[in-house]
Length: 308
Image (cartoon, rainbow, N blue to C red; front, side):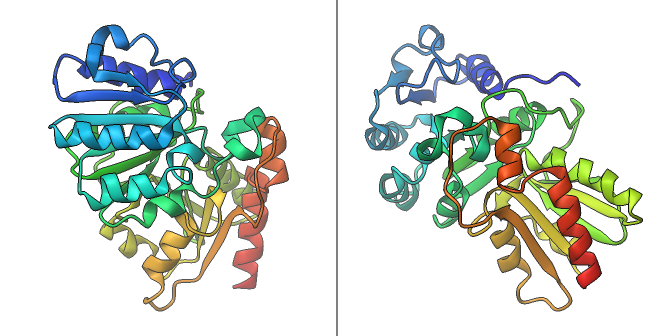
């Protein structure tokens, strides 16, 4: 199905709420044209701030706005929203217990030709370390809009990891996203838990596995922190394979490993980027290079089930 570009989802959400609540503020670090927010200044006036290429300064400005009662929405590319400004995010927003939503775009290999310096494989790990933070990775435009709506009432620091371009559509318009995860496919032999662009790959992998006689369930775990308590009851007793467009350390796989580590009978295998930095390239090449395709998921799942 035709989907909407994620940057347009973000822009339209802000435009829709620009007058509904005077508390919203929009912050960019010289990437407004990249994120399609450059026309929002007309709607937000002084509540729209482009700080230039000063991401750490942007987090400080956001903290000041939050102290004044505003609810800032902050965007920059994923590495600049996390590792470059981690101290400012941790202290000025997290430690200070202020309300703010950070959008980290160009997640993982979706950074494409921007190359290794702009390709975040570690942002989820960093943001998960901040006490009381809420961390999402969204998989399609319908889900992104719903998660953005949730941020209007969320307290504290929220991080949303996303791509900028149009994703593969996964959900219908009326999908319920209140639980923090969605089970997209039932299966008896193994559960594949994925997030972001890997959800579509996981669904294709389940089709490949079906041809091999393996029945795979697929879960989209889009709220990575706090993890939904209801999820544990679904995962217990089944082999679980995680798939993420992120370093296999610190992200979705690590979150579930920590979550299930004190339970018995919870075999888990993690598929993600293994001890690699980013590089320039088109997404099909990068997905293959880092082992993130549906075929990689299917092969890893087959080996996991047969080994178990």
